[in-house]
Length: 150
Figure: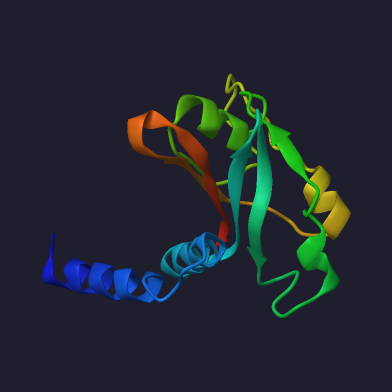
């Protein structure tokens, strides 16, 4: 690990140590991940029963400050199956880096669900989806970064 990487990791760890609440920590992790990847939007899904629940959602285009769109995903859930991008990532425990969700390679088992974009007017293009796996391989959730601006 380079000195610059160690410095960054130390800074991030100190930032996260400020929080006592798991929700605040996860929200801050999403903010850091978006900043580092230059993503316009992002979501942390948490596992609840056999579903992925939208737990933390950021989207600079739809709600740069507090607006009603922030709650557009409040009741949204995805089954943990290979049908969706986040579901596939959860099932396989493998990250996906998709440059254009509207032009997926032929033969992939998952599809892009456009219904969230249609509901909010947002246009998802690129997506980096990473499984959040705890000790003993237990799936905790999925981190999804949307529309890299870099």
